Image (tube, rainbow, N blue to C red; front, side, top):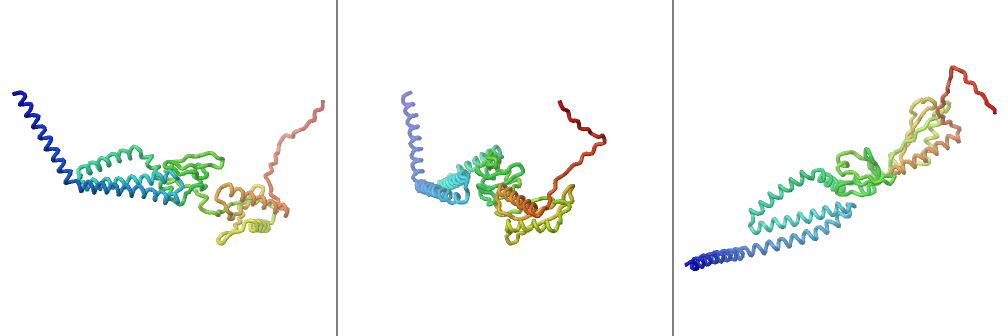
Length: 297
């Protein structure tokens, strides 16, 4: 009797399992067209992601010199296309509940990651934005409130500057988005200033004409530019002036070179015309006479 009970239980379990397998088989047969379509959709989006990312990589490489930024954007494009294909395939299979659960879970995970990596993501998106901005490029000479140098690399997190003394400065990308900076490489010509002073006995109109002529001969000005000359003040030992004019320079060393040349030219024309460039002289007056004694051995 016990054997009959065991046999009946085993037979019922096998029958239920068989019915379940038949149900699955029938469901697979019914869903087979949808499964084939979903597989074809996945293959289609895989091809788009693969070749689209290669095309995007070539396109971005022409505009962005930072390889890390280009790789990040192409990988993001690849992942987004694959995810779109995956969600469409789930919709074709009528797995709406699974799709909703996945989206909800992805939203929670994305929120948690965003809160945990807020600073990192800020620098990353700032790096992407900087890569597309025409106001900063590789090899540009820029100057911030604290540093200046040539842009060597724009990575996902940092802008790397090479200072004129060859030291490397690593700055977070967000600083270039939130704070002002000067890019000397954007304008091929800029105005420089040279200051000097002449003695009180000098003819100021003649001095002005000398300076304007020597600058005009050696630093030609383009249309819309010009040479400016201003007397500034009566100094302690000289009457001081400044002259401003445009030169070609996109980095500080070129500016210093042009200023140095202008100073030498002004000094030469002053020497040729006996124009005195005075220097401060201090006279010490002592109430008590000082005697100087020569000691001989």
